[in-house]
Length: 568
Ligand SMILES: Nc1ncnc2c1ncn2[C@@H]1O[C@H](COP(=O)(O)OP(=O)(O)OP(=O)(O)O)[C@@H](O)[C@H]1O
Ligand SMILES: [Mg+2]
Image (cartoon, rainbow, N blue to C red; front, side):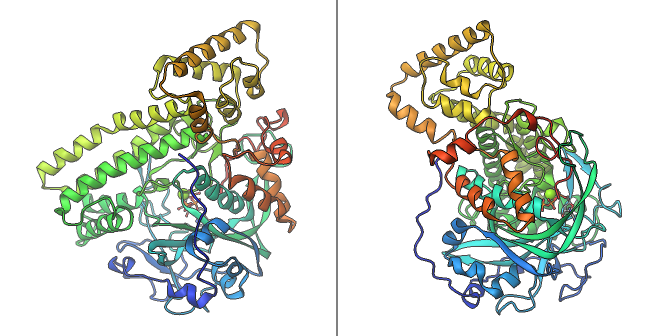
């Protein structure tokens, strides 16, 4: 659970031509392109895509692109020199203009279709054709697949213009949502949570898009005005962008007997998922149906661990549908998300998401997504009765595996070797009643205080003497448990400090960064990037004073800060 190491060799990619040489499309080329679309990707109209794994699409560049930020951490990991982020050709490429992309890069990108299941129920209504054939990456498109330091990465523009799946949308992302996604992805990585990463962020100096949003000091649940915001393109990077919904799309087509090639397409996308995300964990010599069982087992484990991480760091995804559930176990789609400040198990910042996606309900939401994954694999196993029995066992074991990972995470958060149900239940009740700040509470606890004085720093509510007594009683029980472990307190404290971050995402401290960026001032983005890059460490006093503090009263229930309904 420690922060990843930042030690990488000197960058060896200094220019765009060398960057382009890292291209390797060999895995994606095993997939089938949509046979109807134009071969150069010039077709941007919303349409039904009946078959194939992806649609070629040329991004639509944003006008007058300006550099906002790049991730130094990811650049270092890939071996890219920081200066590349300011290179004209590089900017052109990652602000959506592929016309000058050097060979062997292709001058078009690709978007993929996917299905949507909300909490285990299949939907096609969100598709303009009501068939599900027009739903997928509406404004996201990959432009690069290649190898850096022996690792395969895919690079995807978000906000790069409409694709066949745009559903009439403009294909754009505004600066506000792009800044959030850009910062959040790198923050999650620094927290040690598997996630898509951020490469670059470019903004248009002349193009804007209007989105519903909140007027200043608005406390309404839904946005009350339309706000015009500069458009931006952020590039995200991951081992792949395969989603549960994507696998599901091909399985649904098999079940519906949509076309003659449906089963082959399903098989190929599953084989592709294994190759892209599970290569190091699944023996390619196993018979394919056995590989599928392994795939289900390992995804079950990764998904459970992911949720345990989310709970550990206070993250709520907000809209954990199957189309936002990465099939390799990464966090994906930072639109409706938020981080819990005043503790509430039902914390859910996205007003459109519903309580089933609230903070403490994420294990169940994950299970619903896993169910869709299981169903898709079951479709593929079809006649293999024995394998289906094995697959069902994996499905049935989900709750137990999830519980194990969550419990050991809670134990670690409390510095315990073993999870203690009673102590934990009491704690959650106290935390909720007192409305503690989730991050400050666990961070203060990590110093193993002997009385509740230090913990009070995290309380949003004034406590009565009776409540204080309950807290003191809980603390003493906890201290007793620690004392009975065969570890010294110094070791326990050290591991708690690496489990419970000091710095969290506080929306009211992030919002000024995207507001200032709108005026062309990117300094706060840089400051936040810096703070978020080292969330477990003690940082300078000025940073501590600004970022390690309770959410001010005025921001509770504030539209755009405490909740939001539009994430694009
Ligand atoms: N402005 C837009 N133009 C076209 N399509 C859009 C737009 N905004 C969202 N979409 C599409 O609508 C669907 C639901 O949107 P959602 O906000 O979940 O996704 P997103 O944030 O764009 O995508 P992702 O899951 O790729 O991070 C997605 O398939 C997305 O591509
Ligand atoms: Mg999405």
